[in-house]
Amino acid sequence: MGRRKKGEVGRGREHGSGRVLGSRRASWGWQHPLGLEDQHKHRLRVDPVPHDAPKPPGYTRFVCVSDTHSRTDPIQMPYGDVLIHAGDFTELGLPSEVKKFNEWLGSLPYEYKIVIAGNHELTFDQEFMADLIKQDFYYFPSVSKLKPENYENVQSLLTNCIYLQDSEVTVRGFRVYGSPWQPWFYGWGFNLPRGQALLEKWNLIPEGVDILITHGPPLGFLDWVPKKMQRVGCVELLNTVQRRVQPRLHVFGHIHEGYGVMADGTTTYVNASVCTVNYQPVNPPIVIDLPTPRNS
Ligand SMILES: [Zn+2]
Ligand SMILES: [Zn+2]
Image 1: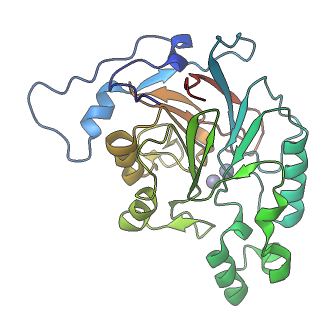
Image 2: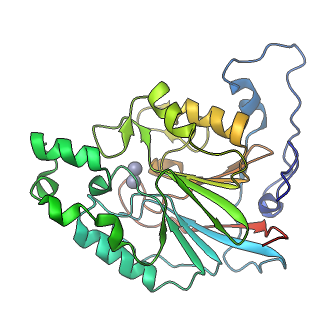
Image 3: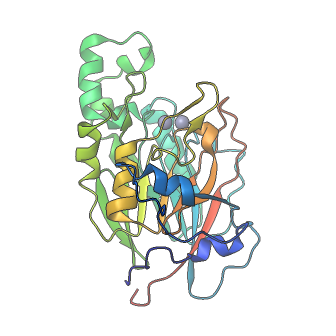
């Protein structure tokens, strides 16, 4: 599919609250080495597409959720073609939770359902589990008690979706890549130190990906934690998204406080956290329409 030119306005934000600024740099010449002055100038809050808005002809409708944390019952799922779940579908990755989530997926009518893991899917992180069994971390007692044969093939319980873990799939002509890693967060699953370790994971994302799904946000986009008065997104992910991969859509969650949609003129960013910071599943799924590639 043809790549959009930098600064071109994508379909998703025609429903939004205003125009997207161009990509003009500061006239006084200095550029932040991490591109921060760029994105501070151009990022923009966007209103999500109303669930009852008709889908334009020739478009694919993505329904984005994340951080459902085994609380799917009250969620009103809107019409769409492709479901994206950006991780934290359980509380602890217990096989019983994964089975329940898979049943919920099976009840949904979408043509494709794409899922990644988050830091709460402890059993999906094989290295984490190997350590947990040895050390018996006191704050994960119910997971420490699992026998290896109970979680070795936990991914295979997800029969009603496409599960991505540092991997890619093409649906309806869109190249979609998913990755569960995030900056270290109290020793949960798929944690890595900031800097090189995370960058090495982001370097696996191929150029030409249209839709990127990660569990955590990039720095500066829907990553504000009011309690800490801090942005907690990953700067290496920001660089990867804005400077190298430039996907049309980046879906993530993890920071429940950051639910919403933003855009920078190239990429639409969705923090799809269904659960609030208090684990109330009240944020509606976020709908994004993208033009379906002609050759699909
Ligand atoms: Zn979460
Ligand atoms: Zn998380």
